[in-house]
Amino acid sequence: MVPRKDILKSSGKLRRKKKFDNFLIFLSIFLFIFTSLAGLSQIDRFLIKKIKIRGERTLSSDIIAPVILEEMSGKFLGFFPKNNFLIFKKTKIIENIKKNFLVINNVSLSLSDINTLVVEIEERQANFIWCEKEKTSCFYLNSEGLIFNRAPGFSKGVFFRFEGGLPLGKEPSYYLGKFIIPTEYFKMLNTFKQRAEDAVKNNFSDKWKATSYFLKEGDDLELFFENKEEQKWKIILAPRKEEEYSFKGGDAGGVLSVEKEKSWIGFGNDLELAERNLSTILSSKAFKDSANGETDPLQDLEYIDLRFGKKIFYKFTN
Image (cartoon, rainbow, N blue to C red):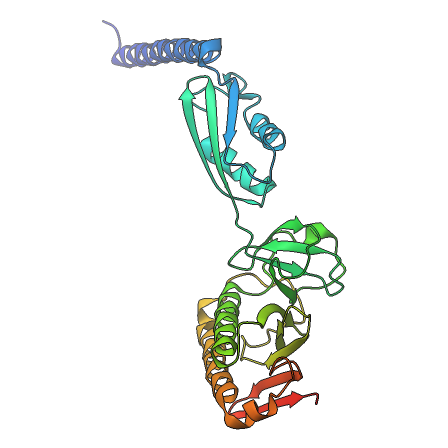
């Protein structure tokens, strides 16, 4: 009679052998499927060979295509081509395009056929320019105050201009991708600019246009108006800002934190008060009596100072 202990040992060996045999079968099936898929993925007709780029305005397809091709070169796990139409990484390609070209706002990818990738791009709209103090170096801004591309030299009046808000004298690459001031402030300033221009037009004429903001070091900012004769005057403002934030320049982001919400609400409230005060002074008899330029009532105006609440100061040079 075979001892029970020997029977148990034999049974254990059989189970281990069965498990090992099953593992070998599974491994063989896995390797067969893996190598089959790897082989199929490399078939020429399944590979993306053409790239069509649409929607570019200032950029050239020739400089965008290499960024896409770089992401689609090589193989996943050393076996699966990255340009296979089933497994190419759309998200990664879009991220790399936006990273390399700040001028691009949106990107979408699609296949016109299994061998052709269609890249639709939407470039950012240039709404303003930001210039260094010397005005020798300018950059495009979008509607949120983001610097996204170098701008060529412009004659006056082509774009509304911002100066200040960032350190001066840096390399051009330093400014790209930065907001000149937090977006909330930027949008409020542009609203005030438009309403101030309307107030001047309604009380005097449309000869005067708001042309630039100068963000001074500290708390003050100046909105300049000019006419076709290049005469100018300015509105001086000092709206409340986030604690410890100033226009002296820095690497501030484009969004204020939620806990600072009261601060930028205060900024907006101060601009609304400044708007009301501006309308009041422009429509007042005392101001209009002082605005007696021979060819234009405002030609001798130097400034309107709205920094002190209801105490409004202005100066004419005559």
